[in-house]
Image (tube, rainbow, N blue to C red; front, side, top):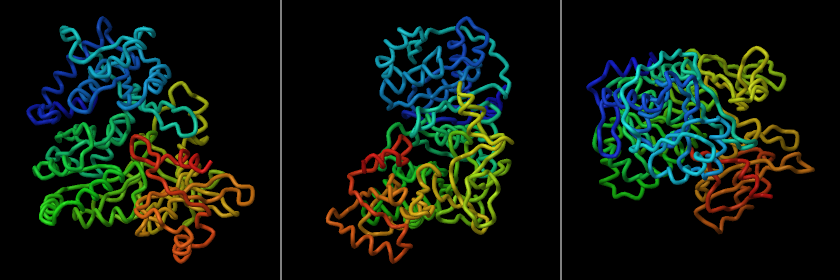
Length: 493
């Protein structure tokens, strides 16, 4: 029996999930997931790693369906609720999904495609009642889930994790961040990404905690839920914290004070999925009383590096390797760099994914000969803490013979009172190799970029300053709120 299912059996009468105004116990979750596993199995005894796509709204139904697929022996393929049909078709085709489960509102979009491709479509609420079947015994080495990478340079790749991989990712965080059955969290993150699926939902349910769901982002609603006094763990991405700060600043002083007092009682607040600007971290500390715990992870590895739960959380740093996760920094020849030098992060451990779905060459390319996963991210270790310099493909700009961190420039630019947000990239240039350019969202459109560059050169080396600036209404982002740098480059085409 899967460990997460075994854990749930220890908390049968406790609230597991709150969604759409309803509360559900662990017993209700177990019963509903076992019943739905019988529906999925139909006349089979074991799905034997068949891929099951599911496009289900966040909440009780989402977890029920996820657990049902696992208990029936299938591989879960979470599908993005906001993707257009061609993107969903790609996921179904690439994984060879034989079953797709949807919330009723998504059925019209997929009915014709699933019919034409002989895919069984199950619409929640309209499935036939079946008698409970004996469920198969699931080995932890079986494949459990396929999540798709963002596909910024090529078509998205399906990242395959086994139950063993997931259990390592979850149990490591539960231990490091001291989750317990006394915790109550809220999920405001998309559930086709590791951040929402593993860090929030799976860690809370694994621990016997309560996980509440908010279907649509609303700063007002989040703060209203905070003030009810139940939530004590909160995880989000920098964009969400930025929006919460903006909303808080719009409130009268009395409401601000009440929210600050409420949040100061939280046990833990975490930020990840994109670089956290130091300015946002500092503002949030004033507002909430919390130094956000910043961590580092990706679809292929779950979480690998984290600031400590106890001890100093350093602004601008992602922390230290988590227990059970081995990390190295290497040069372009995959040799360890000297202390104090930047290098690409390599990771090894049970948390590391199994393979890219049906892409053996791509899988082999991302691992060294001795089994280390190449993250593509460049970092440096300072006083024992890792600091991300950028992604080797988009955040490390090679200009005029220098290797320059785009993140370092962005962090400095955000300190300017006129700049609300920015993205620095390198674009091809005959003279410089790559030209440093910056797209930015500003609160004063009459900003003089020559004056801005003069201001920046007083704070960092001239060769690091952008040669071109572009003022935009907003920066291109993916579903997790992460700026898509390749789309930023296109703005300068």
